[in-house]
Each structure stands twice: as C-alpha cells, then as structure tokens.
Figure 1: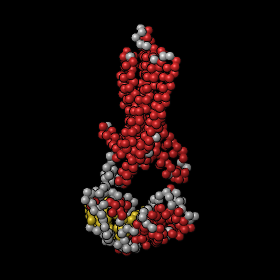
Figure 2: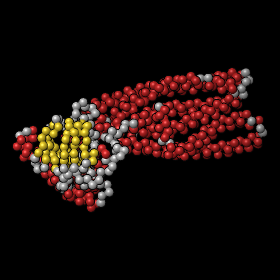
Figure 3: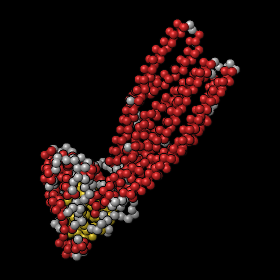
Figure 4: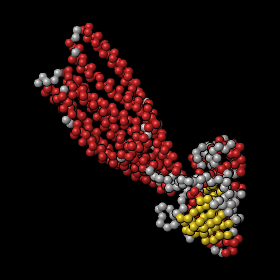
Length: 575
C-alpha cells in the first residue's frame, strides 16, 4: 500500500502550484468558519452589557468584517470547486494517457487473455473515482484536520470540562471506523471486478448484436446479462451493508457527543461552573467539530472507491510488455525482403504443446510464397512471428541477415504490410481509413493507392465519395469493398514485405476476382507470403509450403506437389 500511495502522490508533481493554492484556500475557508461561534460568544458575553449606541456601532463593525470574510470564503470555495476539480481532471487525463499508451505496448499474447470491456472499465470508471480521490482527498483531510484542531483548541479555552466530555467518545468512534474500513475496502474492490464483468458483457453483446439477432437469441442474452447484473447487485448490497453500518454508527456517535455535552453542560451551569454564553458557543463549536467528522465519513467511502480503482490501475501498469526493443536495437533500413527461419518453434502461453516445431525456411527477396495446410496447423501463427506479434519460443527469424529481435519494432513493422481476412476499419471516413497506412500522405497519394486497389470507382459512386462515413468497423460497406480499402491502405504504406492472411476466402466470386487482381498488383516485386484457403488462387505461386503439426512437410510449385501425390495433392482435390 505504501508504494501505491507514493505512486499516487507522484501525479501531483506537475500541478504542485495549483495543489498548494488549493490547500491554502481550504485552510483559509476552514479558519473563517471557525470565527462565527467566537463572534456569537463575544456578542452574548460583551455586547449585552454595552449601551445601545456603542452596541450598534460594534455590531455594524463586526458585520462588516464578517462580510469581508464571507467574500474571502466565497473566493476560496470557488477556487477549490473549479480550479481544484480541473486539477483532478488533468491528473485523470494523465493517467488515462499513461494506461492507454501502456495498452499499445502490450503484445497479442496479452490481448488474447483479456476482455475488452474489462480493459475499458480501467480506463473510464476506475479513473474517474481516482481523480475524485486525488482532488478531494487531501483537501478533505486538510479541512477536517484544521477544523478539528482549531475547534479543539477553542473548546479547551472555553471549558476544559466540556472538552473532555466532547472527546471521551472519539477513540471509540475511530476504533469503530477502523474495523468497518477494512471490510468496506474488500467489498469495494469486489464491486470493481463486477463492474468490469458487466462492461465486458455489454461490449460483447453490442459488438455481436447482428449475430444475436440472426439467431433470435435476445432472451438468452438477457439471461446472461441478468446473471452478471445479479452478481453486481449482490456485490453492491455487500458493500452497502458495511457502508450502512459505518454511516449510521458514525452519525450515532456524533449525536451521542452532543448528548454528552448537553448533559455535562447542564450540570456545569447548575453548579455555576460554566457561563450560558460559553455553553452556547461550545454547542456551536461542537457542530463545527462534528462537521469534519462527517466529511471524513464521506472521505472514507471516497477513499475506498478511489484506492480500489488505483490498485487496479497500478496492477495493469505492472504488466510488463513481453515484446520490446532490445537495448541495442537498430532501425531496419533499406529492406530487400530476404526472410530466414532458423529452427523456429513456438507455443502460446496457455498451451503445453508447440504450435510450430523446428521450422527452417529460406524465402528470397521478391518471392511469392503460399502457405497451405489444415486449420489449426499454425499458418497464421507462422506469419505473425515475422512482425513480432508473438515472440519465437526457440530459434530465430532474420530479415536481410538481421535477427528481428535486434531491430526496432517500429522499423520492423513499417516494412511489413498485412492484409487479413477479417478486415478492421475504424469508425470514420474512407479517406481517413486509407490514410491510416501513411498518416502524412498527400491526397494525390491516397487517390493513387485507391486506384491501384480497384477501390476508386466504387468510392466515387458513394454519396460523399472519400468523405463517406463507413460506420463502426465499416458496417456500411460490403466485404469486397472493405477488403479493397484495406489493400489501398497497404498500397499507401508501400512495404517491401507482404502477408496476405486468407484475404479472399470470405468473398463471393466476383469480389474475389477484383480483390485478387488488386493483391497481385500489390505483390509485384515484393516478398509475399500468402495464407491460402482456396488452393485454386495460389496455383501460380513460385513456391507452396504445406504446414502441418510436424512442421513444413512439403515444398514446391503447384505442379511439383501435384505430381508428388502427397498432402497438397489431397488437399487440392478436396477443394
């Protein structure tokens, strides 16, 4: 916990000036609130014995002074509420940027194990509660400390007997709070987990809403959501159970303090040991004393919310990227496209068996290589190792003689273009999606890339042309249109190495022919690896590799492999 609090305090550093002013104004507002009961005591003790003219003059003077203090308090509270909240929002901004940047560094292996909704919850609701804690936490503690300390000193001066009576229950109150605090912390942490699960379920449902509706499974989804929602409600009930005991207990203690003071004050007045004016002032200060206790009650709940969120935030930041640049990594420059696999083996973290075993492969620059095999044979995994989406378990991969682990990730991936079967287009316009391949591209370059991908004509037929909004994941476009935009994106990137991952397998014949023409144009003069589902589309490949669980079992041209009558021939005849 100590390390977490130290890290949390570090987020104040860029805003230390604002923070110190916030604390100053909190101090000023608290001190001003301590003045009012003293004025009441002065009036009831002294003004009552003055003549009318002197008393009126004194009251006007006191009223004028109090008016100035009220204006100062107004300015202080405005600063705390506005500038202080903006400071909290800026810290939330910094933390959100930090965790988002951290997400970008993590590899496919991490995202294979995570749920999008849970990751989103750490960057949204968790951070909001943290920012509220970072802003209000120190401020509430400072105000409470000043009011309690100030009230205690003034109460002690008014009547030591009444002060002892007021504070006799305080140790019991804090012991009560401490015990319930630990249970509340566990309950609030459980709330965080349940919120993340609910977010995951909602994100999963909305992303797959078309599948849900196509199977008419809305009721099943409702039941799944109800189960998650019930779990969340139960977690909330548990936390509110302890919170209810906490709030009601603390309120009862503050009321008991008043009861004890009233009883003690009554006895002391009867014995002529306390003046009525002192007793009235004391009761007013008791309210000032109990007010920060209520603030601390709210702070305790706020702390549990914010700190449990911060623990989850730190937990995520502590996940180390498993694929990073080596200390002496150099940029990969002037790439020709020679790719060599040397005794490469690979397995995922959660599997005992190896997906790839002892792969030795030499692909010359500019070669068109097709990879075929049954589903689950490791074709996509093999290609994913080249841009280091996953790290090889054993062996090495070299590009132009450079071990890919010794070059920077950015330069490596800048030199590789990937066209996938499941095209991902971002919400926005066609123009923005194509430009993603080269953010600094000119309009002329983007139009040329679209023409090379056979996309320009259909784009111009759309109502707004290149400025047409394509919806979430390009839902407003057909499969063939989305695929051509993704190809245009790679044309714009202009990499020397290409990977086509079953890029045409989900298309109809007409779309497949158009996309195939675009792909062949894109592959010209580049090192190209094609993962093929329809074997008829790769008959002209310069080299075909048959990948199985045992490794690369066959290699050759279409004619050579057909003549061999082995695995490839059987696969081809079955398609």
